Length: 588
Ligand code: ADP
Figure 1: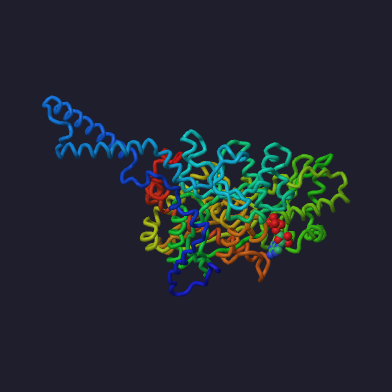
Figure 2 (figure 1 turned 180 degrees about the horizontal axis):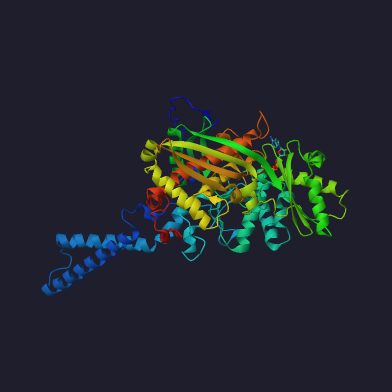
């Protein structure tokens, strides 16, 4: 379903989707737990034990006293009063309970184990077989109570245990596991040797557990297409980490409503961005402009003299050479179009920053191939050029660098909105003067005092990272993609607030890398920017960049308002701090 839609005059709230329940979901349900005999008790186990112990000793004391009195009075022992009869029944009952209690471990083992459960030689130790089915062993990782609270890795709640993993391994797999543990089979070669990515991952995981003596319980395994990451996204997989995805919005941006997926474990973040979206929508929406769209790569080359390095710089920056160089560069892909070459000399070394458009791809591969073409071409006229590295950090990728902040990298976007005074008061619970003053003293002056590089904002990286993880972007590029300056000023005679975010280096793509994986692809689909644009190459990735900027605008608006109203700590305590006693979460 396409999650974006043109805004209608009155937007009705979308209906919740019908709950779909799969077997996997049932397994993951928080209701799922292993039955214990003690579950049948009406009181907590320790309290029940105390009650029965007290009962046992008190009635025993009472009966002994009565016995002594009867002997003293010569009353026959078999003549019992009603109270003595009740005491005898209570004694018997508490005795039965206490005997049962001492044997409860035995009872527990009968209740929680299926009859087919048995240890097998090769899989003994912390992992044991639960059920045997045809020629398959279904292995369950170490039961929590088995660690007795002594292990260090059991610091997650019971749900994490239930999440894990009923991994099917055959006797044949057992042989492979042993050879990986022994080092005769290389772990990284499992996929090519077995020709089955999931099986390779399961075997590797089991081998890792045995080699480290550490349980991987809690790391999800089932429900993932291991073939989809082969040779592209992740090597030597053993499972996958689950990150919850929330939605903020709708965000009304350039006349279109977007429901924005955010993958995060930071409580409050989605709720806060959602509040910002509401403030923007109620005020008529935000608008955005893509100022520039070009990915960069800057190799470093060395010459025998600074003069030669300078000669190449002049050659590359001469406009009359640009057409020839771009023909060579653009051979790398039908989507790569060289835009600019900017050079910097450091003694005998030359840094050449190539910038090109890359269609809907984020473009690192594409631009690198183009640069390689040009380097090969330059060898004819500059045979004394020594290529030190295809990336010389003048690009600059995944590091804070002024060149990205000033020149831009990826998509440079500016996004703005005018928020009505009434909305500032009712939705954001603050005032325009308070917001303007806070922005000036925090985002501008405060960041200047800290010597910030592109960090003239409240928390752009929070929103950027969450959207990047949800949509399969490279989360490491959050470094420069979060460069942002947030500006606020009172407009319309102080009645409304003008807010803008300027983000010069949003590096996003809708094809390639992690964007093609099922979950990430679904999130791109929700935004209506999945895959390559059918209308014009680059349209989808540029649209995604504007959505990132729009969501950052919403995030800035909401967090700054919370700060101005002094609500931040309160709301974090509500949404971001569980009231659960973390010390009691170990080994449940
Ligand atoms: P990146 O350069 O971001 O690392 P990849 O090289 O992984 O991306 O993916 C880009 C690939 O997708 C290229 O092979 C390119 O030919 C192909 N492709 C298909 N459609 C498009 C498009 N609309 N824009 C960019 N690349 C596209």
